Amino acid sequence: MTKIVLVGAGSLQFGTGMLGDIFQSATLAGAEIVLNDINAGAAQRMQALAEETMAARGLTHRIRCEPDLARALPGADFVVISIEVGDRFALWDMDWKIPQQYGIQQVYGENGGPGGLFHSLRILPPILQICGKVMDHAPGATVFNYSNPMSRITTTVHRAYPGIKFIGMCHEIASLERHLPPMLGQPRENIRYRAGGLNHFSVMTECSYVDTGRDAYPDVRARAEGYFGRQPGYSEILTATRQSGRAVETEGWMDIDLSHITEVRPWSDRWLFREVLERFGLLPITYDSHFGEYIQWAHECSDHRGILDFYTYYRNFLGRTAPQIGTHLHERVVPVMEGILTDSGYEEAAVNIPNAGYIADLPEWLAVEVPAVVTAKGVQGIKLEIPVGMRGLLANQIGVHSLTAEAVLQGSRDLAIQALLVDPVVAVARGIPALVDHMIAEQSPWLDYLR
Image (cartoon, rainbow, N blue to C red; front, side, top):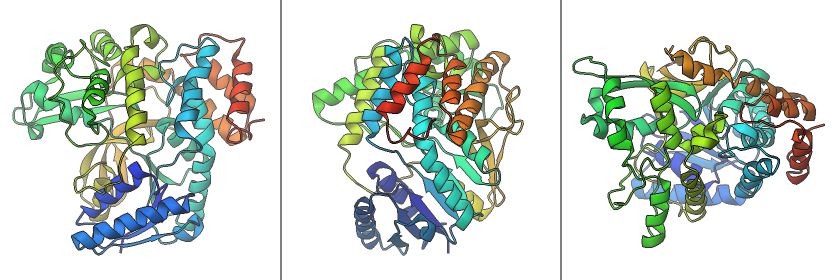
């Protein structure tokens, strides 16, 4: 019997989404599912909801809550992590806005730039504790992580625990599934693509038609303006939601119906996206808000209204999501589990793993986002040919990721300062120590370990 431990299972979005994905899998029928969360009441509510769903659908899974992770882990085949600490959005506001008061023009505050650093400093200690318990009690388990900042977390975990089977998962790659078929006028099964880079800083590297083998990238470049220039962004989604009172779920692998939105700002949410497409000839797989966190000139090019509206929509939507365990696949971790259990050898579109030569010019220890072949041995990354210009942008993150990892592992305030000073987004220097001290004070107790 397959055993799956969900860490952070009390979260409405994560818990219901993961349970829905597990319940629709024939390979995982009858699996043992252990719900672990520091909020025991939230985990118990999730268990009750799961049991209702199982009874209604005639499912045979075994499900229980176990607040002690050391007791939850023995015998686990898979562990899935999705956690945050503290008040997520209050801390996120600090990550984003306080660095701006010190003169840093960051476009967002989650994964890259100063916001990404402080988010990492806060969330990595508990994730490292979780991984330490995995290594003590279930060393053979495959660990999937959904928490951000994905690249910095994955890099640091593998540095702390070199033998761990730790894979970062993200659904941003699903944008290609949604947009390529209507843009190219082809069914999904006739389009082959690959993409890679760093998490939330990834581009499509190749695209072709399955039936003819012909390169489809020239068609993507030729049709991008006519297609993406007219696509609704989060400004339009937020406006429509406010007018109708009907929110649209935009996270995950499912199709999204935006046909009710008719008025669109040109290239909404994608001004930086357009710049990268024009200057580098590469299609980003995500919006300005995510992609722009890593680029020093992004503030000049980004659609700031779209970024702010995305943040507002995301916060408001999560705040009023009703718990519901669905019947359709929401994320990609369950297909990876199935591929490992059945030794399928299928190609997964995006995993976050140590580089090991998959992207040139980047060190082997850096966590990159690449496609991978999934077998009983786990995931094996696929080497990508990324043009030198994009590799240059990616290489700017090498020192940032290494110093973030060392700042956490050594509990070092000075290394946190250095991580900011090597970040391409940071164009000031004198106020950086004061910024770090300010954030340590504001985000106590989570940053108290920095000395």
